Image (tube, rainbow, N blue to C red; front, side, top):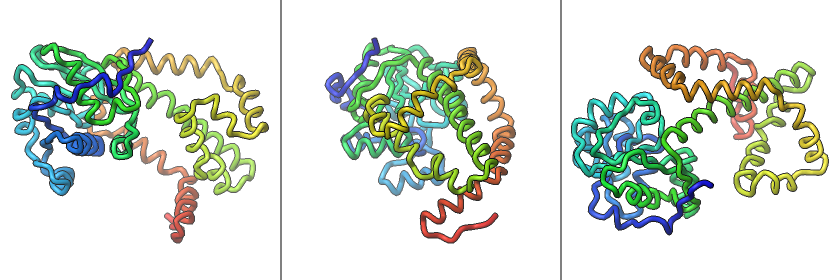
Length: 333
């Protein structure tokens, strides 16, 4: 059985007299900082001098260089992109670490794959939202919270669990229940979703577009039917809110029969093998090494893949549809 923590499991008093720093003021870092401050915990922002730092100033935070913010703090929230976190940690965070510090990660990636190796005298904890930054902020403001994972990789102080749960509660991460995971499990689940589930969904939609347009259906109608109408997104939202089986009752009998009678046709052995292969590649650490090399080279393959995707003619139809929905004149590229 999974261990699920809720607000009643946490004691915010454990954060009293603790100095908090959020390093990185991107979408997730900003939401973390605002949520913590709204819970009456003063937060210092660590960020290089760029547009994100300017936003933090406008939001009323004290902004310091990353190294300075880290060395002054007890709980250090590392909210930097996975690919740059290790270098920033080594150069600007690690030199100032002291016994009693707690490193808080929003992703298990760098600990799981060994890019960051904290000293044995600090706590290392995980608060991984299952939402984008905007969702983390909206969930807090609306009092709904957001789904999340929590974990402890290192408990030097013997207070790591108390502190991570207190911080998670302050963020709004326990309101809907936070599932306990190891850093390795969180990283593997996250990467698997990105590399198996989303690519499969994208491939299904792309293939459906090609088949329907080839058979003479208007491209605009195809896009609208597949996803631009928002129906697919609504279905997913209902799955998340009520569960898959209860949500089926919202569909017509025709839709239910069509779905349930055709599921088996798409359960291919090839798909199972592909997903097994993706998971094993992730678990062996090979994707982490691949991504580290891609980052070191300046993202050449990522840029090439983006260009290839952007070259598909169907996106002009998508732009026209979105412009029409906003009463804007369509553009031609």
